[in-house]
Image (cartoon, rainbow, N blue to C red; front, side):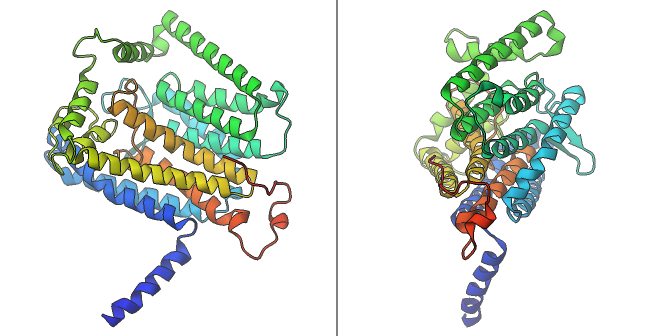
Length: 408
């Protein structure tokens, strides 16, 4: 007993030495990682029966590998100075766009999705969704670009960032409209916080709507370019209309049944019935399965964890003493926030069906890895920004950056 009491402070000191940054954020991240094994193990049982020979541990092990790799990435990124991350984005963004081109040309379809969004990594045997990587690379690059002193009043001053956004989204849109819309919305939010005038934001919205309309018209004239327009139309019609066939509302009906059957305390871990029938029960609709098994109580607990996570990230952004630090945190956090809101909204039938996963709780390597990298960036800002450095001259560290925090 004395040795255990003695070793506890030693263990805590070791953690404090190697895990830098906001400790409460670290605790929330580790809590989500641990919790994620319950829905993944349960929701994957039907997939194990259909494709894995009944071996549920195969999917659990795969999720563990994704978390371990994600944890390594998060740890490595959080040890970097976030200014280095900003400089690296200049080279990473062109590489990400190149990966999007490769994906569009010869990507892999997964899970029955009629869209090429993945490329296979031969060495690891995993598939990787390049749009997730490109979105983070784009937002980090935008945060760095807007952090420098610029006159954003003339619309022509925005040509460089708008060009980067347009080029990135052009190669994502044909296969994934929902991700395109989320990246565009995140970019607009970032530009708004950075100080882009409302009149310019209005022009950007108008250009985006015109571009989307033109793309739809081109696809209608040349259907071989993309097969996703008909899918978007069907999902929107299914969402707004009550007069649809049963096949069109199959997913949403099962998700609503799962949520309704969960009641207050749920059926219990692993006792979901709808996971056996609901497509993508371990990814796109995992929140419905969580609600069925753990009820309103369990779903509310998950929502509170995410709310605490997002509040902590916004607190780090608000306390950052540099414009780049604030924008970088918002760039990394906005994707997770919107992704979570969209996933839960789809599961509860508040939005049309999309392919957005729930961070950490959904199966999938790309989502977990990019979430971990984004969190690593936020943790980097939380311990290397001027506000976190004690006994050093802030002006020497940030000669060209304003010291006053932004109001977010």
